[in-house]
Image (cartoon, rainbow, N blue to C red; front, side, top):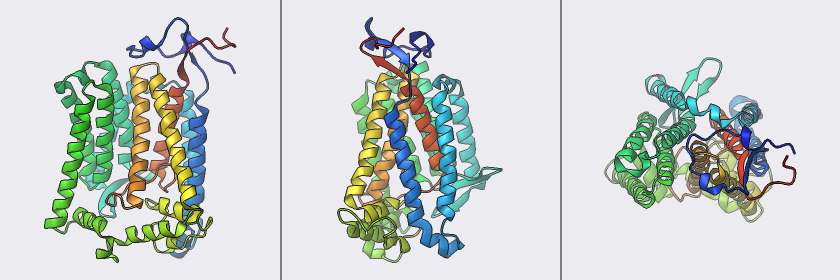
Length: 400
């Protein structure tokens, strides 16, 4: 395998990892992390299969075409693979000067959602764009925030050392999260906020204080939801009540949760087999947020364990990439990407198992959704790009 050594790697603007490199260590440009690529490819292909299995009956009934959703998903997955390959090939250094523009563009699209957005399921999250069609800007907000914070943390390394600087970064996070939350995207806003807090905490010596602030923030959100449930009958309060007792509104807000739990219960250890789901006929939009319940029903707890294991491997390899990255921007970008995918997967599984109130968060790479799939695969392309730059303890044998 041909490798280009020290001179061809991007030059770090700051040197946070310089202490890791001794005279006996060599940093070189090599191939992308094959494990990360393999895991993403398996998850995406499995997602295509599950979308087809989950949606065929509903698509046939509603549109007269049982393959409508799986065909669209294949198209989006193909675009995602092309984007992932493209971003894995070019240096991540090209992203650094675009970070501010990505943030501004994302904010502008979120404002467009507020003004002329398309609503569904109690939230307004989409806009219609020429050529692209229906698009969900909140998905673009994830990488935009990640790269913006990575750029600022690298450019102003002392920012995360003082509460004044942390507050300034918090405004940047809160502004984008607020634009997402205003038209009803509270769950996505919470995820974006969590990504921002996590990145700032990792870069700051005040790690545990920031973790505590995050925990307090989560408790406040939970308290607000409980208050809405106890003293009102709002959309989010109703969802909170359906989480506490789905059978109290078994034909309304608790219906999806109950059907999800039925699917999980009927899956057993090895499931009913691909296409053997009974609950897909009852679950509204079974190919979307609740698809993990059908994974358990058709492939059992063993199949669910394999999927969770793949996500665990992806997170593990991503953390290694972040730790070995050549500079602050690439390290923080890698961590932000891994955390974004990991927290979204955790929340989705928690919703499906009724561990937390129902939210509109899909399962990365597996749930149906063009914007989410393409953006998530694009972020994986950046992670694969960063993985090409590594620190090794000794000179490889084929070094020249």
